[in-house]
Image (cartoon, rainbow, N blue to C red):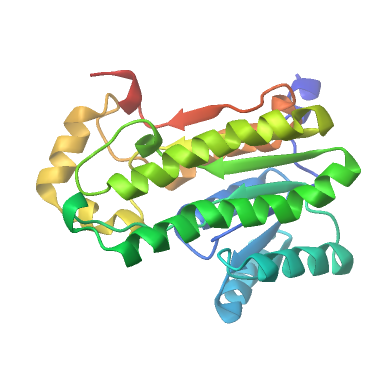
Length: 257
């Protein structure tokens, strides 16, 4: 039993979680830290990142910071390179940074469309490329792209967001095609509906919440901590032969009509 459990241990590994100053990113960072990983908190705001890292240290976890904006390619590469030189290897990358914009598609602004692409898609590309260059030199690494049920199912008002998450699913497969033979496992984690700041407008809408609970076989919103087990699996040696896959954590939402 102990040997089996050791497959899930992240002791001795370091995980960078983009956009981990709050919400799902912070929950994932805490979950990976609980499995033994040293975690790297990322945010554009240095003071916010430092405060979050300090809070995790107060909980007994090993936490550092890497301050960069995922939409700025040169900034991402410089920050990753400097971190690896100053602190050590990044063994696990979780591409979590993301935003949401809501509007009818015919009224969706070009500015909001471009913002979604820059953060949700470009950001994952920039961070993955920067970190993978180091992983490939070592011949090992784990990349977890945070996708969404919207990468599989569409809903009115968020078509551009769904487009970015569908693209993330295919980017994950592309990473597998490019890097699987060179020691990197790249997979996607697709949350269903979780009560976070990003979903605040929906959480506060009684009609939507009632519809969601009836639509989801589990009958409720997800709790962010319930994503951690799947993330630990994808970050650990337990998933060494899992590559290019999307793991839905959605209370059964995508399994039923």
